[in-house]
Amino acid sequence: MNNKSEHFHRLFRPGVLNCRRNLLPAALFFSFFALLIYWPGHYDHISAEPLEVIAADARCPVCGMFVAKYDVWITQIRTTDNSVYNFDGVKDMMAFRATPESFIHGKVQDISEIWVKDYYSLKWIRGESAFYVAGSDVLGPMGHELVPFASRAAAESFMTDHKGKAIYTFPEITSDLVNTLRSGHMMK
Image (cartoon, rainbow, N blue to C red; front, top):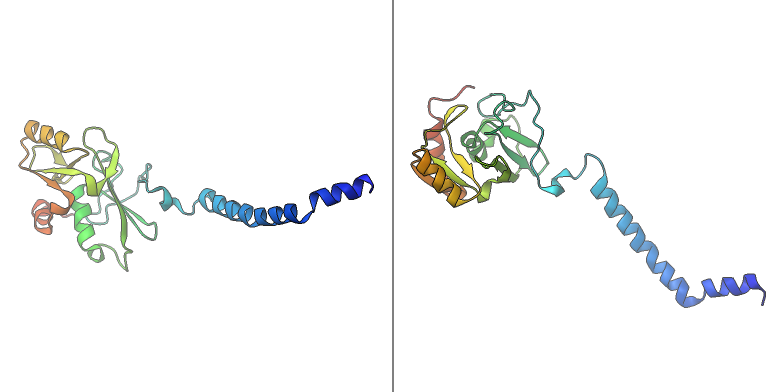
């Protein structure tokens, strides 16, 4: 045999050919997966993170306030269609969560993420895992507010320092509590 035919037979003998045939679907799958992850603007919800930059004209859908100027108090809800709603505080976010159709025209998709900022660190934390202080002497943009913390210890310290009345976990925040905090403070 000449060198060309030996080379051909070495590369394309049945075992090697089958191996190469199996690599093609795997390579295509991983290429497609990488394209999905890195495609600009698509599948952002995979990261499960809040928006860091809030547009200056972003308004709270509950009260109508511009939220960007109240960076300490901004909260966010992301829905399953990747829409993000920004709020000027926890109480308006909770009002929206209870009855979104009261504040948005049309159907609002299911909520997939809730984000609040820890009052001391200003880092985004999951709303469902935060501890909230009510009745303190610290007021939000629209009066009394539920002040979020990443830990119970931080919430207890804040409650002592700022004359808070109670600490709530996310599931303990009722519509009655939210409505009491919101009474007399509706701009819309």
